[in-house]
Length: 211
Image 1 (tube, rainbow, N blue to C red):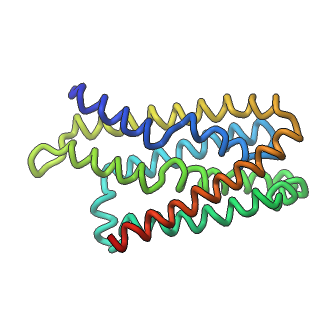
Image 2: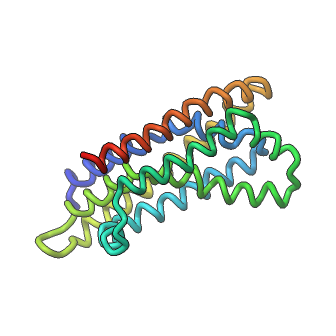
């Protein structure tokens, strides 16, 4: 097993995905949900992001080239969608809607926010996808992929996503300590930060297009 490649892949993905840094955003996005629902979101989001990044490692470069989709375009689209979520967080629209939701609606909401914006574009965003595609390129031996290196890369992706799930579960305990008022303040504050991050996604995408 190529140890240097695995260490490089692990460090790269931990830095790019930043499981600890995603915890405050996870707390804000899942504000108002029961503890069990938050855990479900954490597991679903990690599984979805793992599948997306593993798929990127296997066919990501080929798929983007086949569909003529550039990473800057993906970054701009993700930023615009993320901004819509951030605006709802800032104005409290999401919390009000969640408080009126029935159990079935909550379950549907859990599935939705696990896929977007948590899994995509926060966990498996343009940066992570780019890193995985580049690492998959390094896993090639000549013109063909090295099965051992590629399998190791997918294992590293699973480990990083597992770390995200664990960090999110711990984050739910922190949310309980903050209480209702603390969660409301945190949601508004992180909504502004998320909006800034979304705008930065768009700026980076536009800059890459014009460079």
